Image 1 (cartoon, one colour):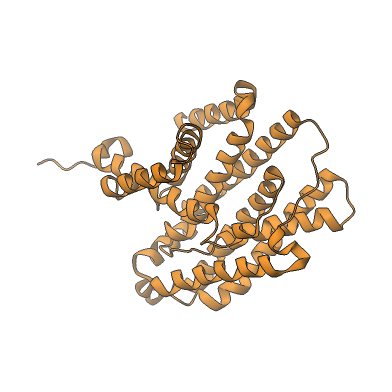
Image 2 (tube, helix red, strand yellow):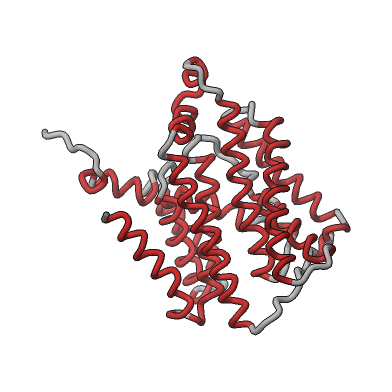
Length: 318
């Protein structure tokens, strides 16, 4: 009963936030995007133990695919947006399936380097392909309404994506799928010896991550009003770096850790960008260093160690 009340309270607050803080609707919309980014990275890096630096590619695919549909399909704004987001998610999943067939057989540092290479290649492709604007990027169609209505619409759209992503992943983690991912993370060879089809589970996780990233990318491209080709590559993408940092900050390999990390990271980042302009990246970098040193398991991991009884862990008597 208590979890249901907690989720209900969180839902009510989330729905009321645009009314309570109308001046910060865009920042709050980005908060939900950050939650999706952290959760989707943790699906691979935390639950499965495969540190991927190429997830940003699927986010970029969602951005570009949605904008292309809106530009070329001849649809009104809202049908074009929703159909574009659906196409972006579908193309992202197809790209994940195709790319995964080539790199999911790699492990450890080899997998990480391969995914980093994907991000670099995608950034170069987006910067040189005239069909998607090349280095000049793309500008999605203008929202047909007032600025306040636009911000509120995208807040609820981004919240809806996060509100779908979280319970879907929660359901997956609590079943056979989650156990399989954890078995791969703990000892993939042993999992295979026990009859687990590890490649199938890895490919499924990769595609699920791409699905939600594709949806989020389509929304963010319209929220920002501009698609920068640098955002497709991990090395040049703030989103690509942030999704990794947020999951680690909150505590990777947990359900709530990436959410907590996204909230703390985004709010801190906004404060730094407001009050430490010019030094904001230095301050953010120093904060990350401090957290990694003093909270190597993430904030949630640290809390579990400090108060194990509050997290349902048995405390052995001395």
